[in-house]
Image 1 (cartoon, rainbow, N blue to C red):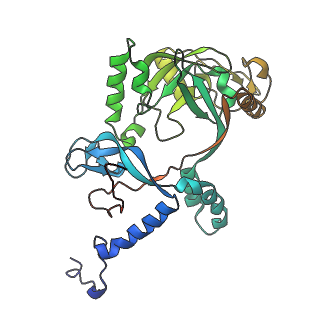
Image 2: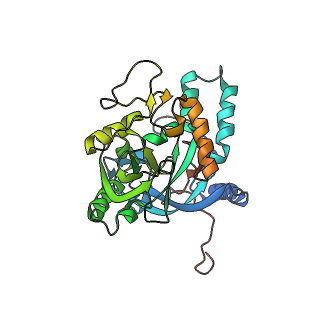
Image 3: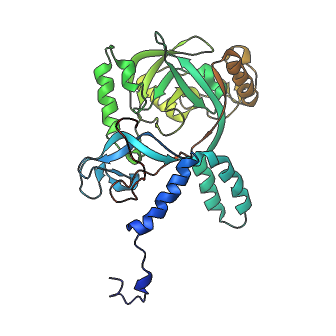
Length: 333
């Protein structure tokens, strides 16, 4: 084809990436990363084509089907190899400063958002009548007194487990399976919030109030812990979900000036704390720090820095990619 187009190449210098003489160097680099602990193996949920028996990128899933054979794609958890690029998240972010004036501002902003640094708190909510806890990450610990439900991603390990033995078991299982069959891209473009109650409750660690646990389609497994403390009065998505399912809306932040109709829409800005026990009257900034300190004091949470960036799953090209140079032994793994 290239010859017919008239391109002039020295074909003696042709490089074939599928040749063992070429990809042995890919394998050499991989083994060096494995020695340094940069490469590691764990299970991951991926887009899987049952016909081609291979993993697909989100871009290769077209309306829920494989781009090559049109087979419906399923979400499948399989062992995968990863590179620890999250170990370099802070360095990558800092080095963007050195590129100011050299790269377009729009590209720098895109890179910054891709890395996605968030400062907040990790909080552990005990599950009623269970030894398990729900761990959440939030950038707004100042809103913890306004939590009226918990929401889990359909992929969360506890999603189906929580509903076992309840009247909601079949409904939860059907809901989870519905969304496990969808790609991340398809999930991201869904406008309507949907969910199902698990029949179980968590306990707010600062108020001891029972909080219903829901499975919701707008919670993604790939960010944070795959579970959130939902505060409808101060988050737009939580507000929409709460209004749809009749979940209470409890305001705990008021504007510095003026009034707000919390039933009509969420107040998402920072402000002054109300209905927050001993933290009333503090600004959101002050309350974030003091509430986080209280969580740490009680051993139920801690200050956390989170990144949107995720370790790189390099196991996608299972059919035509470079073979991973690792032997698996039935006896020792």
